[in-house]
Image (cartoon, rainbow, N blue to C red; front, side):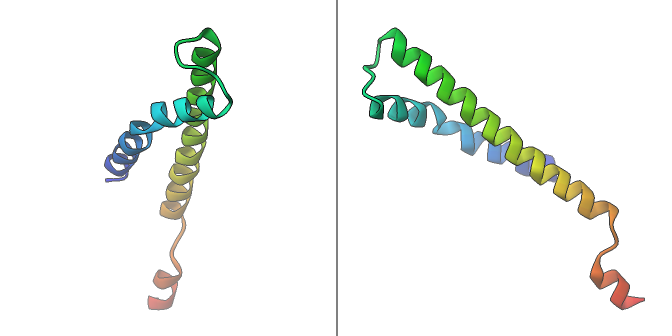
Length: 78
């Protein structure tokens, strides 16, 4: 289930990345169709992928850690 959730988040996150990268590069004053714009968009997309990967790694590690530790509720029930 966690992998399905992560896959769904990936699709949602990457859907708008190209538009966001283009918007960012336009805000820097770069014109679409130029080499500078293409380089900017590529760098922005890479930065977004890195941020997303770091966030997903954090979520996955947090989930894995929570599965290896007894919950507070389990201690109360004993």
